[in-house]
Length: 124
Image (cartoon, rainbow, N blue to C red; front, side, top):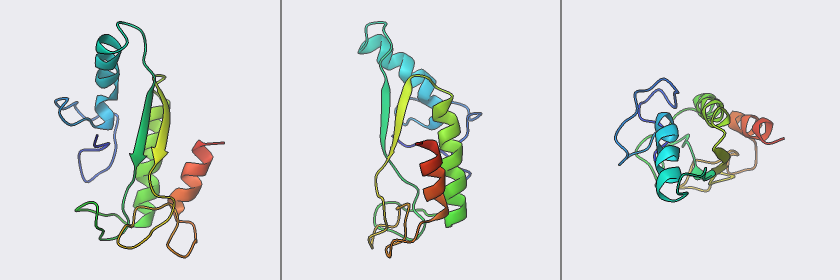
């Protein structure tokens, strides 16, 4: 699952794509499909796991953003998922950077990135 489809990060107003790739803007349609197929008409809660936004050239993804933009995109992602009652969690995959992986909420030395406070505020 890819949680954004442009270099501008997650947005609720994006036109939904086909369900072979699911962006944040598709979560309502994805949830309806899951409810219909797996829940037999009942709501199935969604746990979105392994979310990350790299902040440096890395081994996992062919893109990265600066740490301030990581925080902004994460804030946008939480705005989207908090508006959807069927989403009960958004999980982050890497707490800290560990080269060659740079998608953490903290730098390799343990200093928090700006996104750390965004994530903490969304999980009181």
